[in-house]
Length: 156
Image 1 (cartoon, rainbow, N blue to C red):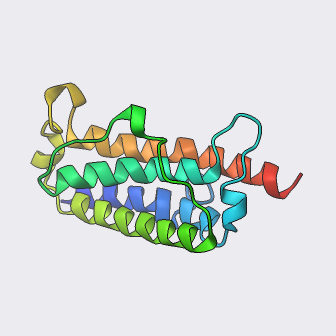
Image 2: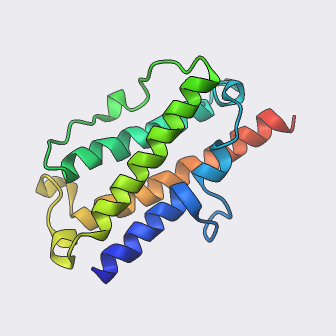
């Protein structure tokens, strides 16, 4: 469980509270961000809101598996979300994002080393550990995009 706790905390750092890798995290970048900035397109890039929703989509989908459900997420749907059209919509989404992140981390920290090394849903997806670590890496990839887009929008 020591390995699981370490991985769960690394995941939390990406989204909720870390500064070690990127000197920031999703919560730091998004919590006080005006919704209009979050949904503002720049060139042909995804918006900040879409990138955050994309990461949440995968967290939610994996949480469903952790709860004993099926793996229903599909890459082709990972950017299809209802528009955010108010600060209230944005704040509601962020609360769901933070809660899903904590739920994910809580599931991970309860995993034994044996569970971490088991196949995730199907052998073709690799182990639970591989998929959890992929979420951390995927999270940092899009966090970097969010930071750059936010700078372009707020410091023209």
